[in-house]
Image 1 (tube, rainbow, N blue to C red):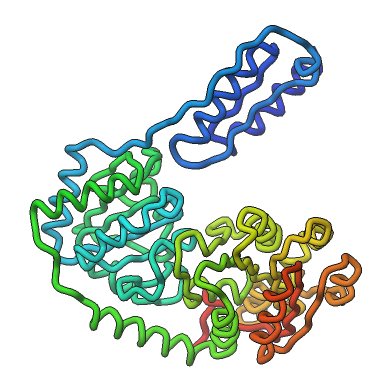
Image 2: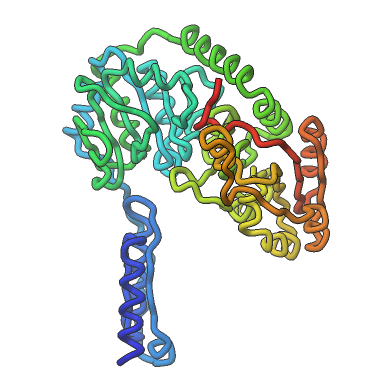
Length: 427
């Protein structure tokens, strides 16, 4: 009884962080429980589930019937809601689109781009939604992450905002009373959580966006192209950001120049990763991965190993700081053991950079807990049997080319001074 009570307590711990948690106590319950777990995994907003089977249940025996897999069609949205969304967008003077990671997961890239081009609506992405459309498309206005991209003006001017697959956690965004929000999400609990919505549509992004475009075609003609206007805004932004942070943009240019269009970039919580949100260009859906608003330090390197295992024929590069990388350096053993040929960039400034920068510029150089005592990263790589390359920033392009051609796990260390992060801009 004491053991079962302990299991109950453990299950209570899992409930707040999963969308479904369950315990079975008889072997005959296992097939139905597994089936139910997969139903939750395959429907609604992607989130983890937890299924517990106590050891005494695993040791027991019973006659069981395996439950066959089931397909779950995604919701397309109510016809009346889709029709109203079409009306609102058709009559909007300045529509804008905010796309999140849910739109990427739904495979809605082409549908979203078709709709944006029909409306000539600027597309703003969350960090997780950055790769939803090609970042060099003239309607892509950037990622909402502190840096004043053209997205700020686009959203300020918008009278109707279509939010697709996003929790709408837009830094510094305060909507005006006249702005109307249409929110599309498979999880209706997201409606209105951060901003009031005019219309919430519980639906799969891919199917609902296609249906809304069909509605628009019945109401209005395609809008006149805004290419010249939008391209100028993008060029002005790029010029400004290059002049503001030449070191960071130079490093990102070196990375960009060696990547294939389908390369997967894992952007860790580090200076170069932060600037990559706004500056590095993604060409295809699902090619830019970050931990987003949780800000999970140490996320980049192990995530890159998983991405390379999933996509062994594509380039995978992770952007890490020295502090974040040292959360999981033991995974160099995993990379070497299984020859996981991901390239790990470690930008070494000897500090937890953003916090150290803050202490320098806002707290009169009172440093507390931000200075690091790092190992020799080349010796660390060698100890695990991984190729190590140390290079100055101006040699990064050459080093990255060598690492990508090696078809083996490679750690590239780039010593740097502490540089300004985007959320503490000093001009």
